Length: 265
Image (cartoon, rainbow, N blue to C red; front, top):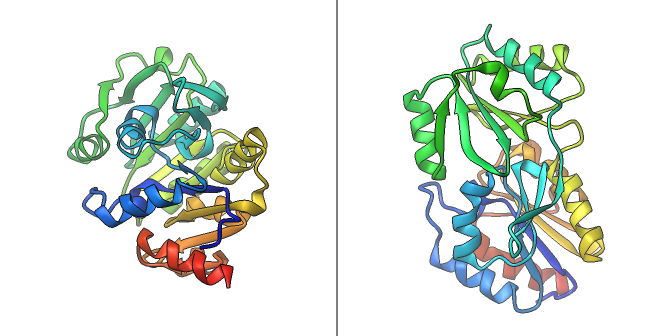
């Protein structure tokens, strides 16, 4: 196996986890073996509350990339090492745009606040909370909720309508990072936030060259880290655009070892 790679950054949903949200035994076994000679961490859009069960289950001790790169989180001390926020005036603009579209907003205010703020608890939001183990609170006072710089905002909507919503967001608040994390989810992130930038920051913190990293993901929001890593890997169920930018494509995490063995030849 090629042991030149010192850091593995792995997306969670659709990458580490199966489509039903479970962790395959073969995936767990591979991560245990990888961790014997390299650092292994998560690079996910999940919040601290949603990522923590998997951090604990997998025994992740390397700082994790959360909120799609807005936060690098020390899994041992339970604090942020690096943190970016959406300026509140831009968050208010994004929220105002959302009023004119059939989307369901979620606001993630801070690491210290585990609640996700929503306008109403719809069946879609209930399903999202159940999948990620989150709790929400209905917004009673919009000005109060947006009186801080949130970490991120997420909007759930019809995939056919979301491109128009994204276009308007980019017109009104071009400074923001606006990405689709899944077909129905539009993420509004801080201006410089991305998994790729967070991976670069983490490499500097750990003194690991980017060339010695492996990044694995399945959505276009993973593109920045796949491009910046020494070995960028896309999942086989990802779209052709992501695969075109990856160094390799695998069907499941258990194939990583074979990929590393071939790269060592």
